[in-house]
Image (cartoon, rainbow, N blue to C red; front, side, top):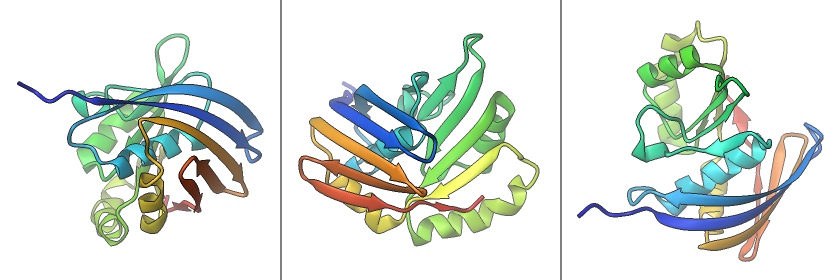
Length: 178
C-alpha cells in the first residue's frame, strides 16, 4: 500500500511592497511522504515571493510533468513554472520550452552551489530561466515553522522576506544566481 500525502493548511497573508501585491491565500498543501518540512516550507516561501490569484500548487513530486507551482493564463498556457530543489538540466530545458518564465528555488547550501556550477554553463541559452538560492540557515528555520494548521504572515521589502508564524519568525534574503 502506497503512503499518502499529509495535508497541511496555511492561511498565508502576503504584503509585498516590492511588487505592490497584498493578498490573503487559504492554502492546502499536500506534503509527499518523501518530502521534508524544510522543502515544503520553501515551496510556501516560493508561493509568497510570487503570490498572485492564479498561482497554484501542483501535484509536484507525485507528477513528473508538473512543477511544484505554476501560474497559468486564461488559455491554459503556463506563464510561470516554479521548481524547488536541484532539478536536472533536462527538466529545466523542458520547463523553459513550456513556460514563459521559469524560476528555480534551491536551498541546499554548499550542495546547491555544486549543483549550480555543474549545470550553469549548459543553460546559458535559456533566457527565461532564473535561479534563486535560499540560504540554508533560513530554509532550516522555515522548516521549523511547519505545522499542520498554520497562520503565516510574509512581509517582503527590498527583496527580503520576513516570515512570521505561530512558532517564530524568519528573515529570508534570497540570493539571485541568475
